[in-house]
Amino acid sequence: MYKIFNTVDDVSRYTAQRLFDQICAKADSVLGLATGSTMEPVYARLMQYLEQDPVDVSRLTTFNLDEYIGLGPEHAQSYCFYMYQHLFNQLRIPGERVHLPDGTAENAERACQAYTEAIQAIGGMDLQLLGIGTNGHIGFNEPKTPFDSRTHVIELTEQTRIDNGRFFTDQREVPTHAITMGIQEILEAKEVILVATGPKKAAIMAELYHGEVSEDLPASVLKMHRNATIVMDKEAAALLPTKEGLIAGA
Ligand code: GLP
Image 1: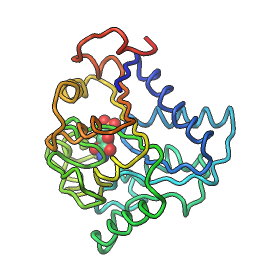
Image 2 (image 1 turned 135 degrees about the horizontal axis):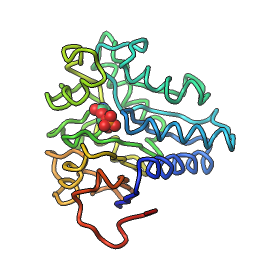
Image 3 (image 1 turned 180 degrees about the vertical axis):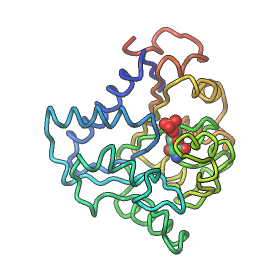
């Protein structure tokens, strides 16, 4: 379940290879995609693999995990903007197969319901990619989010707003709410890969490793998943016990 690599580049190559293999094995795969700085080198590697070895992506479907409420696709800090910048401008998946929660929907609750229905209609994700917040959130499912939640509106915690403030020019610009895929939808993915890199993730990764399954730590739900892999670099894994076999690719 846990894989630890030496460097961010090793982590990114491993994760991108898993995505690439999934696309090769099943041309109509449904991918659950994540944003954040952790995913940037993963998507860069994936694009490199696809350039070296072109694969038909016209039948892929994607669902992104989350979006800030109030930020439209043209906003440089929206996750929609991020996805086009880092992946979709190069990866030519037909537009109607690309799904992102609509942060500017007039009726956010209805938009959440529609997102849930679209995920259910296609039968859920084949492969779900996840990052992790320093408070253990996955997507924007903050601590205490019910494990049986589906796509919903969430109020961001102060910790998350501070963490993500680094992408905004002013802390006050960080949205207070977001739409996120629910934990139940993440849990229903056939396979999940959570990626954590860098020293800022070390404390939460140790908590996750040692802790019980609890709604206080949303990522802990992955311990209940049949096919979840948690991939870290040495910095994110710095507080985990060193065990033979835990380190892959070292
Ligand atoms: C945001 C996103 C999460 C992501 C997390 C970690 O809060 N909503 O989906 O996992 O940031 O981001 P980073 O990779 O930049 O540390």
